[in-house]
Image 1 (cartoon, rainbow, N blue to C red):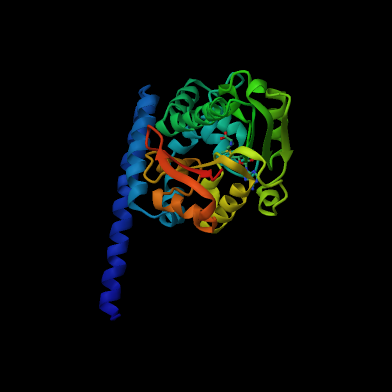
Image 2 (tube, rainbow, N blue to C red):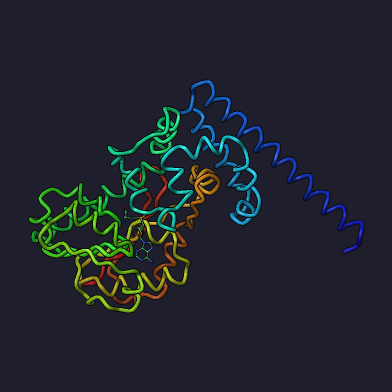
Amino acid sequence: MTASLQAETTNQVIDQISLTKRTIDQILDRTMELVNQGDSGIAISSLFFRLGKLSAKFSCETFQDWIRDYCTSHPIAEILWQSPITKRCFSKPKGYAGDATLIDYIYLKDENIEYANEIAEILHKSICNSTSCDSVRERAKYFGNLITQISESKNRKISAISIASGHLRELDHVSHFEDKVYHFIGLDQDAESNTEARRSYPFKGLTVLDESIKYVLAGKLEAESYDLVYSAGLFDYLDEKVAARMTKRMFELVVPGGTMVIPNFAKGIIERGYMETFMDWYLIYRDEMELYGFMRELDMSQVASWNIHGDKYGNILYLTVVKKG
Ligand SMILES: C[S@@+](CC[C@H](N)C(=O)[O-])C[C@H]1O[C@@H](n2cnc3c(N)ncnc32)[C@H](O)[C@@H]1O
């Protein structure tokens, strides 16, 4: 590259960065204005939308590289961090994003939340009302209903396992659990969350294991033992290789005629920009082909059927695989 061409390219990059900084200033100044005039709910919707558009334009690396730091140096950041969900995710008391206590905020299990002030409360509730949070609540309902449906279709009690089970809130959606399930395993690396899961669901036949997914990957669970094998809120953090290996191991656990379900956040959710900027919450968003790719280590001769469907909001995709009977 000649020196003049290099200078021209450098100038273009500098121009692009200053233009982006001006756009960010406008977005964040406007958010501050809306909050100050008492419209915190509108402030959040508009911030989600505009940061969402910005994040769609830039790669995750660019966001991490400088956009996030630029945004969080704006005075609005201190206000947003007062909302419990943003604060917990950004500060990561458990060392990772998306712990089960934070997910309980999304499940609206918020009786004991203390808000620093009224703005913090409105911001928190507006965030928890976003469509991605609707999808997380819908996901818990989906798995609760699936447990019921499989038990009804087999006309007997079933066995099931949830990997990275968190607080197992899907069980809120299963009525008369003990009539539908004879053996249920929750497996999660977080012992404190597991204590809460055991406390909330002291059901006969339910065991929660303090184990990481290494336990599953090492093949320590008994094969062909579960009518339903699923993992919600985990694959969004796993790279392609680990996701494919986990899919293989999980499928080994399914009984003949049983079902495995793996959800993953879809690309293009509007909340991504806010999550990455102010919550420091990075997920791996995937499309249908990438979910299909989870199956690449499966012995397809054992697969009776598979499908991928999206939830009604278009935010979460579900891969379902049924084993031959
Ligand atoms: C987003 S939460 C989902 C919890 C629950 N499945 C749900 O849908 O509400 C993610 C869970 O994954 C667990 N987790 C993360 N990495 C894990 C690992 N390597 N092994 C086991 N559990 C893990 C966390 O402890 C957390 O409870």
